[in-house]
Image: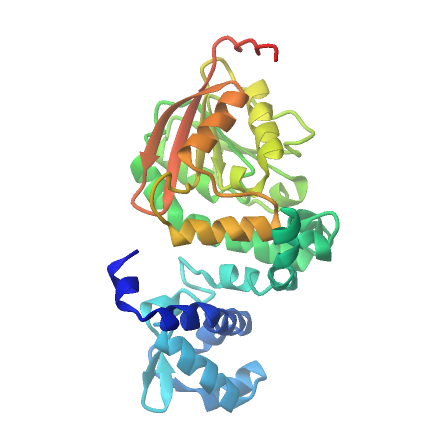
Length: 342
């Protein structure tokens, strides 16, 4: 237990955690409305903001006062001004996190958390109560939600990419494939850091069709990693892909990579890694989000290493980054190792 938690009376710990959904919900709604876009360098009163967003000024003032108590906005006189955190809710901020807050405001997310008892009873994703074919099927059927999801993943990636580049040297590779790489923010940054490499961005066709390619060293390769062959490459990036899936599907993704991989190719699993010892509230929160939405999970280094071995990769390194991500590296076994009979 941390010193801060030890100093907090037990009833206050329960009270704060019980009510933690309230500031979260306020943040989601303020992000959805684009409130931060209407605040520049001067404080603005809620009475002035409300008509621009079609909401009640008194209610908005109360939500913003709550957020200001958590460091999102700052009260100045009768108005609110930006903090470093609230600026990240602006649509035009280069590191904007507005889309990520909007993602958690999607009805599929809130309904899934409301149905979390389904996951608790069955171990299956609560999202299946709302959409029997699962969270990703919901996104395919709701293009506006899928766009928010894509923007949210890009926003989260922007916050983590710098730390990944600082932690790993991509220059030795000539061909790098980003599997499930979304709109290519990670891969494009990697190619800048590895100027002799070329890149292949693999994702579903409706995702790759939206990618604006600004480099002759990058090409898209549309497909479904559960059904289609993957491109050959010397290195494969899997950033926040494996955690989306239960063990069987996660193994299938890694096996698809292994079938395409050249002898000795490298695979890099880049995601939050749950601690083997100690507590990590951030990773544990993501773990329950995966439980509710996709059926995936945040895994320990040992669990990720076991997945790699099951797909004929040899775990070779675990690299820390300056952020929450860790990089678990594996090398394609050469040649494929025979499976032992049960």
